[in-house]
Image (tube, rainbow, N blue to C red):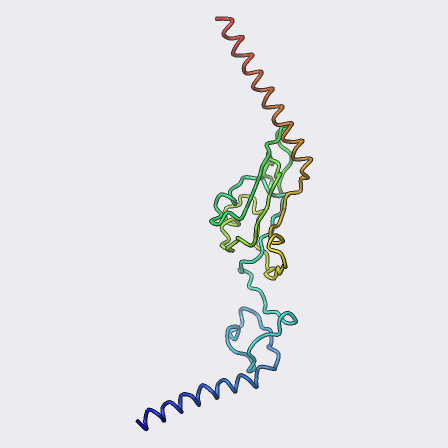
Length: 196
């Protein structure tokens, strides 16, 4: 019985001494070191935490953080939206009526307009699958991790550079071209039936 009581006091003393040690040493600022440093994940100079936002830890190069889209390099292939496991990418494409509308930085031809390219970062699980499947590498993960907002809707980022009026005009031109092709096809079929 005495041995158990002594063991209880010893254990309590060890815990309390550790708490007191951290209580009085947590006022020093933490030294910021590189991720490659051997001491990166260890306690430094008897400090408990960094003084965020005045101090920040360095961001690893392979970190998965905020998504960014270079819309000029996007060919609107929709692969990123299809592979996304949480459906946080919403894309609407409009086929060009004039063929190629330009080239990306890697020389790929652009045949579709991006009427809508939205990413809801509130849904994003930062898996990075969208960046892997992108053939033109226009969607990347940046080193920005602090995107604090007051409204949840503010985490929905719009990357398309088309105005709604331009998108409506492109849709109308596509519908007109499709109708003309359909009419020409029907006329050709009637002419063929008339010759037989």
